[in-house]
Length: 329
Image (cartoon, rainbow, N blue to C red; front, top):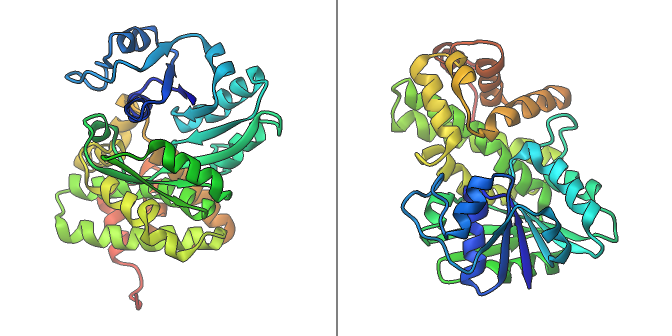
């Protein structure tokens, strides 16, 4: 089984190592000559300075490697998913399973990423799209620390195939069929992670963060169920599991961004200086706009949006949330 990992960043490298550890043929494609040259020396020093990766991983700048793959793993930022998918579909002459690990929505159409990918491929080039998502940081997976995620696809047979492809003694994969619930859950939790970082940066404590995560879970599930997701999904790895890790871990770019914004009581410096992919920033705009359109109550999301896009001070956003009309939980 040959797997082509599209994306030579931290997550692409970490998942490539899981697959190589499982004795699959793995090649990583990337745009960065420096990262590809590094991987050929069994390293990715940009993301993991002290780590030697599995030497069985191959690396290339040649996109035509896609032609010989049985499975494609898309490990690119949300904003690049459509472009890379179309590029892959244009060179394929056989059907493949596409595994997506990005978490977010199309910035213009607001579609879930599996929907975006399906529109890029033809029936002759696509077997299924499987989302491999859940509470996981590349910084821990690359060190082979215990991790559990979910392989999600409407076709359970495809989800099971990917489950078996990745599972080993440190990387356990469950499977599920609630694509809507899972994809919305792992995207919205990035918004909540920014909010969690903001209250941390403002100097609030564990009580505030626990309340934020709990009410954030309520927003995630409320939105997802309204879209057709299942309530029980939000008690699983792609719901509360991903929410916990992203809202509490220093590895989380969304949490880190929130801390910076909270400490400065403004998003202005973040916008001027940030060079990292912070998926929750784009997700906040998408979910806020969709929640207004569909009349779904998303008070935390609304305040994160106003802080990011309307210049509201985080300290003022907290006051507004705490002053909302009292009601039953």
